[in-house]
Image 1 (tube, helix red, strand yellow):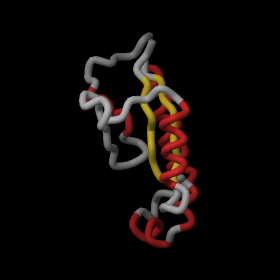
Image 2 (cartoon, one colour; image 1 turned 45 degrees about the vertical axis):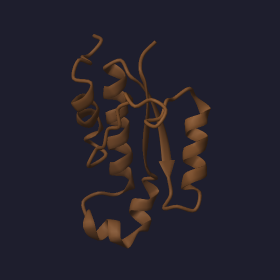
Image 3 (spheres, helix red, strand yellow; image 1 turned 30 degrees about the horizontal axis):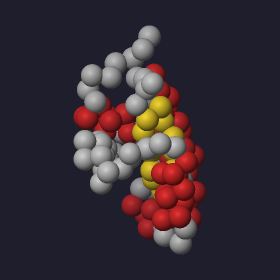
Image 4 (cartoon, rainbow, N blue to C red; image 1 turned 90 degrees about the vertical axis):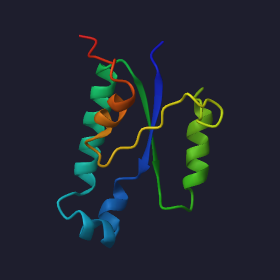
Amino acid sequence: MSPSMLNVGLDPALVDDAPSSRAAFPEIDAEAVRAGMAAGRARLEELGLSVDVCLLDYGRTAEAVFRAALTAKDYTTHELAPGAKLCFNVSPTTAVEAVQRWWPEHKPLV
């Protein structure tokens, strides 16, 4: 069974809706974020990881959505599994690099 990971991040639609996001990252729109996420997911799956995505809003339902995602599958949390790896990317296109910092041994399956 391949290791499972939950990719958690803000809903890409929020990029288009938030003036602060547009000001900070004028070259990025929701479609660019979605494309980056899809490419990262595909690459991680090529590396043998099972990837699920949890998209959050700015807070009203974020906790409930996150809890639902964690309970939908047998994920471990860092509190319950101190050896679990928490990976942080800096953009939608750097998820693979963030994961490979912790799991450098994962190579393409083909």
